[in-house]
Length: 406
Image 1 (tube, helix red, strand yellow):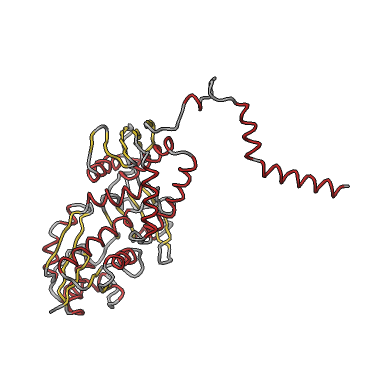
Image 2: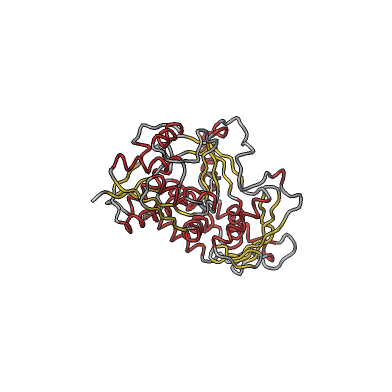
């Protein structure tokens, strides 16, 4: 009985070459698996035929869009997880659900090995293989980019041409992209030159803020337990809601990020990210937190977000630590019900109206006008107690100075 390998397949040049390479070097049947996480119909069009023409015995395409947003994106945003202050974890959040579904296909078809097309320089190899190890530790993992002697697109194209396998890719690929329902990332080409401004032809989901409409629009989001559930009063499923906000935000240039991040493998890399709908949701959720969460809880949630972002970025989704932080975040988010209005204008998403049945904001306490609920004389005792350690230290310092002068 021949071996069977399930390959995480995109239909691009790399994975098209991996199919025949696996067959030749591992004497196996290759089953391709493609995950629909919202990368668009164009990218998935004809992917089954491509896989078969490359030599695969079968190809599974699984729609994961709703599960991706519901079970990975929303649980991440309620933690406040943002990597290095700017990256909204679009690629990092998608990898565990893709690898999990790949493992499920492998079990279904009776495979003995899993394969991916990640390079040895990137983060994705860690994310895929950490999931494999957690969910299918008995299976062999094959990472061709760490094994074969091909090093360039030209090498891959020549390899396919020698085997009469058709591929629409060309020798020159300007940018390396990853797209899903949450974001699209861009790397490579002119982006690698830190002195070069972001190329205009790199952006896909958003217009330039300079070209965005001169009139702002306002969008109203309803939240339940930290999850957006409706836009402008219309209830939507998670994936539908995010797609709608992507369209609105993209038209107004919202959600562009140009950053240099620290990869898990140790090097720095520059990436351009577009997350229009996600930026709107996050700005609205932060505004809701501001009025609902008390100081200590909000500050603790901020600490959780830092750790959670690193876990997700580093491919540690299926770990006890990630589950523990998620449990804490769910508890904190249990009070995050309300409605937030966000104004979209030339690249900005700004919360302008806030309401929640659980709001701790009390205008009668916060007002600068006359009130009958806060006796300002009480602040003196509060300050003296709060600063008691500093007062004691100051008195001791004064005592020492006086002793030295005597």
